[in-house]
Length: 349
Image (tube, rainbow, N blue to C red):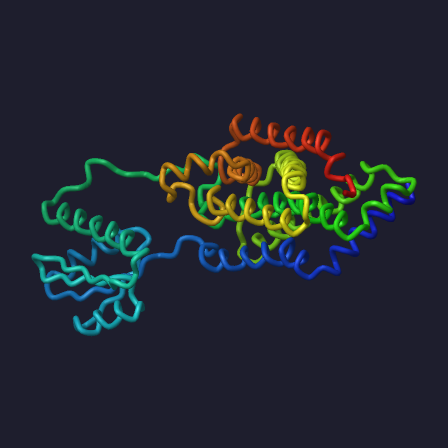
């Protein structure tokens, strides 16, 4: 067992001394969590509406008072309101002359304006009903079918980044590290020593798996402590998806190391695969934003299913049998790939 533990210690030292590996495995996922947390991690922010009352203030004021998720500020002059909207001090403006509503929007806010326009249409409907002396016939009540009623896009990003941290670590464990050992001539002396090839593969795999688990755990801790993101964690599911992510990714790495024997080529192929999965599997970009064709392609990649499984483990979405079967399938793929291709990837030639 002493040679095996020597491999473990050597692999940890190699990882710590490689700045690029350390950055990609630990610091890049944390940096992405920080960036996305500042963008989406603050929860739902109320809209800010500036209003100028030219007549019948009480009618519109009562409507705005009953509008949810809206903070209203009154302006004396239309010019002041226009400047506030232009400078983004107000999300949109309202001018009411007693018979007509005029809404002011900042054309530069391309992403936000559809939501502001929807709120404007809601205000128009409420004003029309109030003038007619009617109340809404249908009351709309929002119901979230997942476990987290206050989930926003940040809650979806964090589990996806955790899954990708494990997948990236597993892919580069075989496609990068083992191929690099082969090119540097380290692998051949190790294999002629009283140490089996499987011990070498297991040592590299355990080191990278533990690093991937540590990175995923740091992401979750970071999201909860820095941005107060609450998750309903199912630890059994979380451990299951973490293990199958790492195991399946090492199987992908074994396949890449056979296709691309040189470490630089294998690492480049692994990076292309990981980045493709990041953009097509709903990790960075909401999956529903992709065209139907790209959605079909994205569902082929295991990262999509593993991200969904991680979201189920953290209570963001409901756990369903397809997620579980996808996890079992990816883990079985990784296990079988290592059994069948591991010996080939360990050849010194």
